[in-house]
Image 1 (tube, protein in one colour):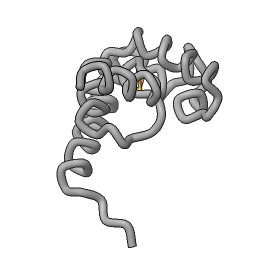
Image 2 (cartoon, rainbow, N blue to C red; image 1 turned 90 degrees about the horizontal axis):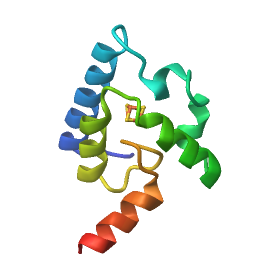
Image 3 (cartoon, rainbow, N blue to C red; image 1 turned 135 degrees about the vertical axis):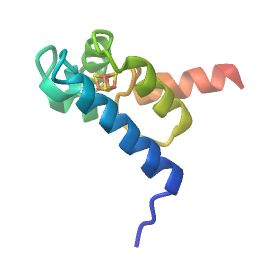
Image 4 (tube, protein in one colour; image 1 turned 30 degrees about the horizontal axis):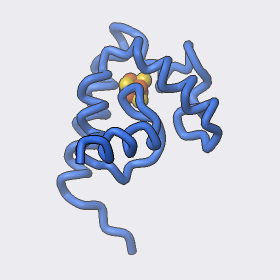
Length: 95
Ligand code: SF4
């Protein structure tokens, strides 16, 4: 059985709430798919991932999303305008 750490679950719900709160007011690209197709955020194809990351720059939740991904580096997929590989590279550079 997989156990989700309490902090991750709490912060994930906070991020989802922020996305849901923003969505009626303005577009959240990974939710609406109006800038890039929704599957690009979780695609294994680097070209897709970069397309999704570029679409994130229009997102009103960009900062909390990037903070979430920074806090939980094992999370896969595109968060806060960065691919998983880009986040890893930034962590390595900062170490
Ligand atoms: S920054 Fe990107 S991944 Fe995060 S909520 Fe916005 S569109 Fe989705």
